[in-house]
Image (tube, rainbow, N blue to C red):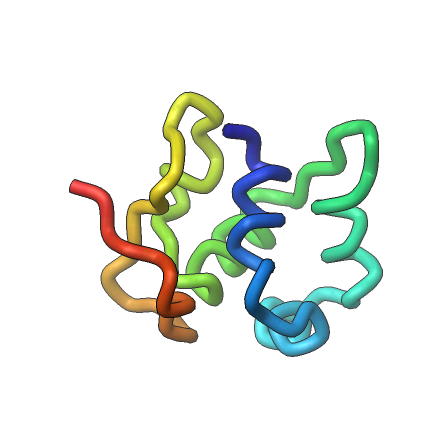
Length: 88
């Protein structure tokens, strides 16, 4: 599962403008991360902030070999949506 696929799934039940604001990026930039046909990856710092805001582990977020469900982080800024569960 790619970074783009994971991000799209994590944002399914959330407002992009709220997430982008918490991460400190423009909502259009966040849209590029999930909608562009060619990979458009964030900087390491932006990816770290995205993972923390979304409540997932950065390692899981960036590793395309790790599948769903997400591995949750210990100190999320926002709680994960109710349909997400922690992976062992």
